[in-house]
Image (tube, rainbow, N blue to C red; front, side):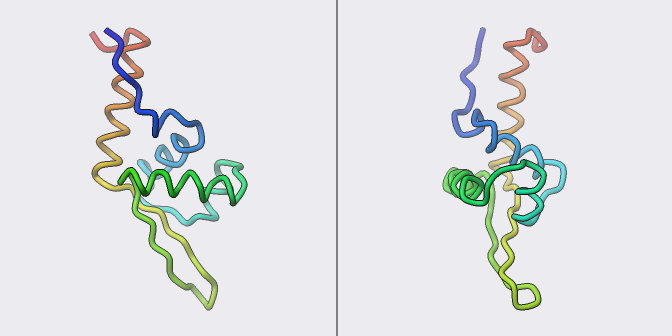
Length: 96
């Protein structure tokens, strides 16, 4: 009856990052940091875990001589998020 919840997405900050990216497709590191109220260090670690899992792509570039980090959701990340939500709904009795 209860399906396993993805341990990568079961972290509050990682789930928040992926949730933001599901709606936006991509976002700058500073935007994600502001929306999640995370510290830069913690956010960097969590973004790296999402990247290693293949859930997001990280692009580092320069904009007006300043470093810019952009995070993009991948198709694997979209699928993992959808499965996570469906599995969570089974806990709530919403999947019949």
